[in-house]
Picture 1 (cartoon, rainbow, N blue to C red):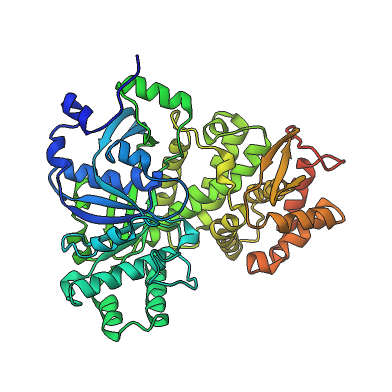
Picture 2: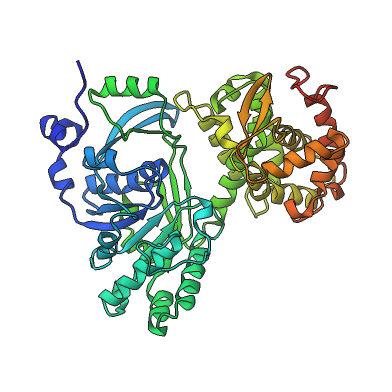
Length: 501
């Protein structure tokens, strides 16, 4: 027998799924969100929904689908209601629960509903902007903010804010709190600078620029919750059978959640949903949270993903279940990365955070694919790990051997063996894998023309265009990387050794 689809009609039939759902579904719109991705639905939207259920925030979210990929049909079919499966360990106890999220009011496509999106700017209660358009979304491009719609996210936001400025005559009260969640250091000020540049390029009036600067808050923020992409069919079937309904918008996440937002008391008053969960942190400076996550969680992911993948493993969980790779991950994080974080961090705080991250990596319910972590591998290595490496050498000349092993695996992973229709593929024990990195063509050329893998290591390590510094100048580091390259590559330079790991 087919299961019913999650919808407001089903909630009428099964009110225990979401008590008081009719009142929740009628709350006014207070947030406009650029992005429909699982991270936004699993973290900011989770907090808003939780606050609404507690009677704290009492507002819903208009979601803007910014890209041209796919439509909004699944959201429309379920009237934007979706289920959120939360699974993992919290305070030593296993958590496995499903939350029905009714925080989204509408989902609009920028390409077909631009007039409706601009009309939202006329809503006095709608005072918050949230975004996650990936790191490449916050870029200054040659855009036309009068287009329907503008091409870029900053172009769209400039047009939206200009519409709001005109709608309310530039009143101070009409200013907004804008919280980008893209993984960029200083994402708030960077977005603000692009918006101001767009306003200048389009010769918008000085009064609008003054309103942007004085009445709007562009808040840097950091999001931290593992919310994998669409769950596999077996997981979807298991969860849907358990909850008794189908859900084409189902998301799965770990229990841990953090949304650190840089702001003052005025920002806190607008973002009142923060009072519903201690996972929302609003403070004047969030650098500590950013550095801990970037260097220990993201940095460890980046240094370990290629090594574990080449070792024949597919997920973070499998890597934590393997004795060798688990020990590598823990030792790398706690003994090499934590002491070298390029920020003033209490060692005990770093150790506590690191051990918490290791527990998250062991989550039996999350299938975080290693191959997904390698997307934009080179940029991630530079942003997440090179500052830590340089700070390590500021403190000591001792070679970080585990870092060197992870870096050697990165170089080996980035060896394309097949180039097809603009895409690059590597080889793992006879099986191809996709190299989804903007530097794939660069590594293809290096691997083809280097005299040997060790020569390639020297060339890449010394390339200041990649790293903004010459890594061969770090005492012993290049030699350690090359020693690990020897362990990873056979004499014929084609296959991976899983022995001698």
